[in-house]
Each structure stands twice: as C-alpha cells, then as structure tokens.
Length: 199
Image 1 (cartoon, helix red, strand yellow):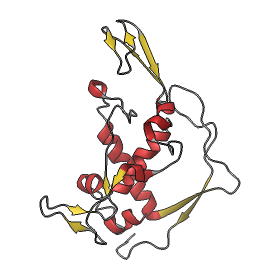
Image 2 (cartoon, rainbow, N blue to C red; image 1 turned 90 degrees about the vertical axis):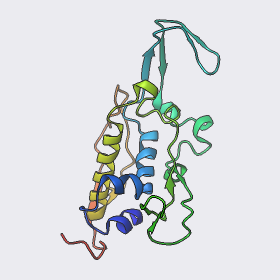
Image 3 (tube, helix red, strand yellow; image 1 turned 45 degrees about the vertical axis):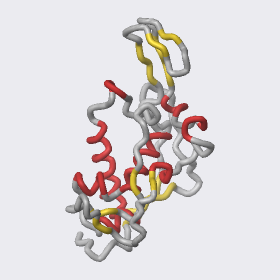
C-alpha cells in the first residue's frame, strides 16, 4: 500500500495511464505475480498449422495438437526458480537506482520515478497468461490497467483480511479457473488514509 499511498496520495484523480504504467511498479508486480500463480485459463491446446520443431527438439507435425498447462508452468521451478510456488511480487522488480526516498524525476524522460524499484517484464513465452507471439491477447494492456486501477481504488479505502479460520482459495478444474467456494474476508474501512484524501 505504500506505493499506492505515496503516488496517489488518496486521490482517484491521479489514476491515469501514465501513472499506472510508470509510477506503480509494485502494484504492477503484484498483478503479474497473481496471474502467474492463478492464471485465468489454466490449460491450453494449440494445433500445428505446419510441421515444426519445439526448442527441445521434439518434432510436431501439421494437424497435431499440443497441450500445455499454464497452471503448472507458473509453478515450475526450472522456469521460475526454487520459490516458484510462493507469491513473490519482488521477482518482477529490479533496482530503480534512484537511491533517494520519495518520487524523483527522470530528467531524460520527464517522468516521475518510484523508489519501489522498476518493473521488469518477462518474456511472453515464460509468462504465458496472455498467450504469446501472434496469439498475444489484444486486451492485455486494458486488463492490466483495469485490474491495477481497481486495486488502487479499493486499497486506498479498505483493508482486506481472510476471515479467521478460513483457508485460502480452493479452485475447481475447468476451462477457466473458478473458485470452489466464496473467499470469506473481513473488509475494514481505512482510517490511516493520506492527508489529501477528500471523500
């Protein structure tokens, strides 16, 4: 929440494309890490339109189906490291090299720079939630902006905790990734909002 509070100062008016994409790297990292572990489409099937060879040398012939699991790939230690099954947003960040607290300005671009590091995107072929290559989801940027804006608005106003005794989400196997049961949470209105909060 520090990243959100420092940048937005309690105001929804500051939620713009430029701010979401450039000044909220930790929020963007949380979004990507959530989708890495809880991808909305947990399994995929593609059909070869021509003969091909996969990077490991496996031959694929025209008309054959290739199935893969986004869910398993997101937890694969050979792909994501030994902490692949853990929620670690920091894996998407690199040092911002500002060395100073608070937002600073990059004089080359004129953009404000966050002290919360810089977002480091991964290859589409490693983070395949939105597909990759010519099949990359056309709505990817819109989905990211919508999720980040919603997250910012909610976390400026409320805190969320799992209901005591309630375990984390359980999922049903499906084409998409629905939960088996409702996620029971306690929602509390924040009292420590920044000074410019005016609602």
